[in-house]
Image (cartoon, rainbow, N blue to C red; front, top):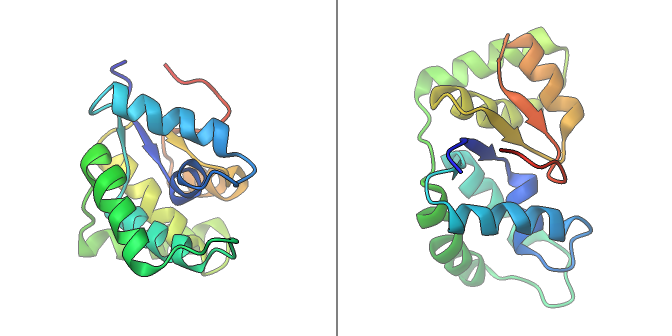
Length: 153
């Protein structure tokens, strides 16, 4: 597989948490990333956001900060080679969010989009299709935004 896809936080978290409702579909992408190095990426923002979400999830067996750090260092950072963001990306993200008509929280989604654009990814995989479609339209992005259950090639 040589197609480049970027996973957002919704896919990383669901793929890492077995009890998540869409775990199986998201886990497929994490496993594909392991089987095809370089075919999947995430943004540096996704690493921080995944850390925050893993620690905050109301699971029966909570994930503490040390556990989240261990999972990210072992399973996400080396496998997804996180895409760095530049200061100008944050400025651009604000412009895109304002143009999209979405609320302030969309800035975080927009950072994933800009990271994917930077590396000329073909796909952005997310469970948050509605926001990403609007952001991609506002950014005149050529990315194909897809649900984790969709096959990519």
